[in-house]
Amino acid sequence: QVADIKRFVLETVADAGGKPCPPIIVGVGIGGSFDKAARLAKKALLREICEDASGVDACVDGSVVDACVVDEFERELLDAINSLGIGTMGLGGDITALAVHVEYAHCHTASLPVAVNIQCWANRRASVELGR
Image 1 (tube, rainbow, N blue to C red):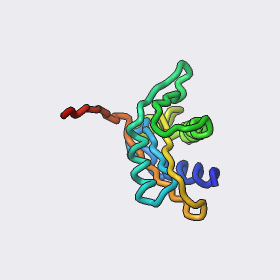
Image 2 (tube, helix red, strand yellow; image 1 turned 30 degrees about the vertical axis):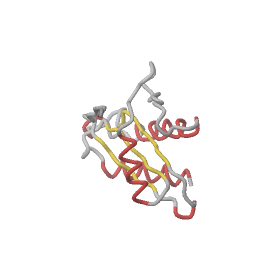
Image 3 (cartoon, one colour; image 1 turned 120 degrees about the vertical axis):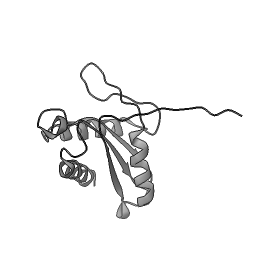
């Protein structure tokens, strides 16, 4: 089923093409009920984008990335998306996505829902702490 998830994510990004103003951030929600998967895909977009020297997404901020398996899956998806050749603003090139973040919940594999949320490069993120 991992291959099916990967295929679905790649088809979704390919279908979007240049419309979301690449380079993009891709949020993937897997499992739970479908509404949970959609919420997880949105939540995935809020994770920090960090890069190591090679430019590969290397951020693990303690959210839900529980094992190297998920981190490796994110990297595989990022490489596969970038190999689509959509490129910046959909004009072709090597960088289509800046990051792929996967969040997941438990579910029965027969009903494995997957949601993909695509954010343009101008992903703005802020936080505030409310006190008493």
